[in-house]
Image (cartoon, rainbow, N blue to C red; front, side, top):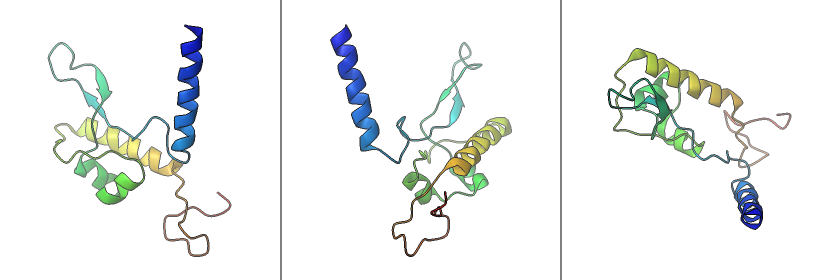
Length: 116
């Protein structure tokens, strides 16, 4: 329906404006393998990154939540390949991340400069 399409689009735009500096898709999620034999070759978005993945990427768990990275303390890394893939994903996200300083006069370590 054309009217519904228009209203859905307007809602998406409103949501994008509401979470303005943050990503529209929500928190960054890890890549995980599905569980059963039938689907275990397939990858999907998981609930959150493990503490080991965050440590390898050099990100604190509290800082991760504040910059839009989901954390799952219950998940375990069972293979080195998936750990490396998710660490790479985190490092790529971190390189593109722009953190605005709370006070422009006193930026902290890790905050972006005015030029960025």
